[in-house]
Image 1 (cartoon, rainbow, N blue to C red):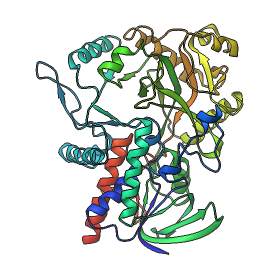
Image 2: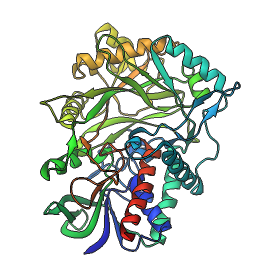
Image 3: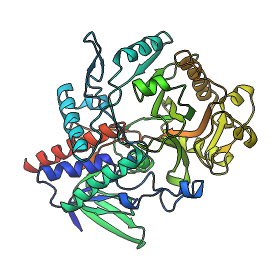
Length: 483
């Protein structure tokens, strides 16, 4: 079969690529491929069963239309919006273009993000922004954090909520179908077809039919997300696709009472603490904060079970959860950050009996594991059903664990109670990225006709930026077709 364009993956970057091609009247013959299912069929059985059932062949949380990020908490960071305090000082937004700054000007990025934000609003995103109504209080918290050598970063946020995300992305999926965008679900891309340094198509495995096929196209876009980072690394190695040694974020999901995080939750909804704790001065940050949220498990390739967090619009808990992540940057001769993270996750999974492990902060300080009866009597009740009490320090390395513990103490000086001994650490929380794919200004690799967008190849981080990269990719392809 022959298409004009094949897109590997159906996360936000792929969905917004297809959407924009429709607006540009350039979607005549494109194909989107994903291992997972359509939005309406993506359901996690954990709530019913009380534990992760390791859905086969692929996890419904990480795979399928709208990808893994969209099925977590659905927060859209509105980087392009600037907010002022009562004295007229800009304190938020102001366009954090991230990796896009390599390819576009600040004005171009801002316009692109505004356009992308409008698409989300068109499909039902909450028009009310969180994190913009208490600017002076935020400034006070930021100044307090600075005194502890911490940065406290905040942006206006549109919170979709996990259940509302399903509805919104379901509308986008239906819109693509109504405009005759071809989609192959429950289909694995097993290989690329590359000849004379040009992409020709992909090899696929249809899971239900258990059949193998080759599909051809003059352009192929890799939009594989973090879930596909390992696969992308294999493809880059096999076909000599230029990359730079990448990084990996390793850490824990941290759960504590809402009352401790009340000011951050109220004033910012999601505040991002960033620090470089002694003695190693590695970058440590909080990420994906979920007020009144729920800790969740998700299964990646090779059966790895990782921890994440959800927050709903209507369903609430008494706890806030967030990730505490340590950035790991490797140097020559080691160039396998994904394998490093996978080995760590596998060992933690073994210790937890193939489940997420949870430990009280105080038990780490005491040099002991957490037991079931201690967790049952703990003041902070775990929201992840099926988490196994244990000792995460058996596997998480000394340097990483030291970074996390010192960071918790540093944040506690800003947010009293952040280091309470009853707070819970779940592991493993790992953010996989492929080695950064080297791209030109058109997001094209050194293989002609092969492009990479979204989080998997290191171009973006987060829903909004990934979605915007899809819009920009569509415009690039449209211009290429016209030229």
